[in-house]
Amino acid sequence: MDRFRVIQGGAGAELRDIHQTMLALGQEARRAARQLALASPERKNTALMVAAGLLRTSAQDIIAANKRDVDEAREKGVSPAALDRLMLDAARIEAMAKGVENIAALPDPTGRVLATFDRPNGLKIERISTPLGVIGVIYESRPNVTADAGALCLKAGNACILRGGSDSFHTSALIHQCLVEGLRQAGLPDTAIARVPFKDRAAVGELLKGLGGNVDVIVPRGGKSLVARVQEEARVPVFAHLEGIVHVYVHGAADLEQAKSLVFNSKLRRTGICGAAETLLVDRAVMATHLSPLVKMLLDAGCEVRGDEAARGVDLRVRAAIEEDWRTEYLEKIISVKVVDSIQHAVDHIELYGSHHTDSIITQDQNAADYFLTHVDSAIVMHNASTQFADGGEFGFGGEIGIATGRMHARGPVGLEQLTSFNYRVHGAGQTRP
Image (cartoon, rainbow, N blue to C red):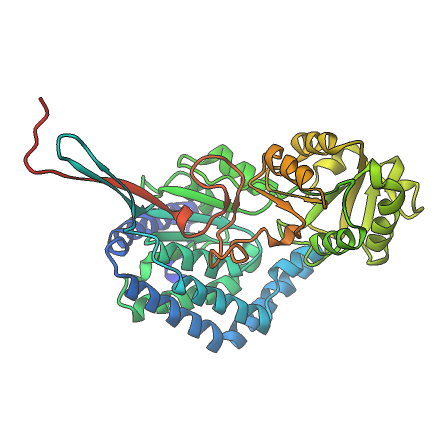
């Protein structure tokens, strides 16, 4: 990677170096994408299986690099939740390797016949799934995204340019090396999974410009400020990934024990992921029976609760919620709690304050569940399930690059199918148009 950084002559020279290197990455990725589009499923799977094996055999080196990143992040005073997203151990590396193997085991998403049309004039038209081309992935903290994104893009026949966060710089570098070696051993271009070799944020700006027309789509995965920058500056299409302001609504027909289990898991299994619950809504119909047990359970588990007047009334430890709390993705052991008068009020609250990511209802009333599932306009809407299942791997996609909250092309977990497009292939027998 050092060959990319020839820094001399001050900041201006460094910026020119970043510009030139990024353009070269784009050009190389475009050439690699053309080769990947023609690569056999067997060759792509070989690259993935080799990479998975290398992740395992390189585990101690990856952990050592990760410790360096974690120590640097801790010195900067990052939050415990951010450290959790950054940290890798043997179990997480094994899960990463297993995820790459799972992606290899999935059916190839390209070359599928999606539809056929037989025209009266004898033309036969096929719609065939094809790779998107070159995908730029910009992400923060979680170094496992390096493996997930690289593997998914490769399986779907796409070249990718990965720009991880500066806080996971050393960890991501070693993970990337495993992917590149997999490509080499499979006889595929090692530029097919590129990694931005700069911490400087100027490299992000270059990527958002499209690298001379060589980037087809950008996938951001990170906090609100990152996504805002991407959406503001990008000159290529973006798979929108807004913050996860995730709601759990305890309906009037909710079973208390089930509600306790689901709320606890939704919030506290891992607080730093985008599927973690951030707001708990409790129906006034069960306020007397459900609110106090749920709030006390969270408080006793070390979770800070910020609530409305009703929530504050059940425990003196509850802090007063302000307007901004309903709009906040905490990614910490903090949750906002509100009592709502009806399912309609719950839906209205989610529409007003939510991010269209993931929202869940807990109820034994199927009609209420159907209403919620129909009226909540989020990428993922759940009934009697933990919001922490908002994950491509849990959906059976093998993995994900992120959760898209927009409405164009991809919505929900961005997996293999969402990383493909299609073209039309027309078969004739000499027909001409009159």
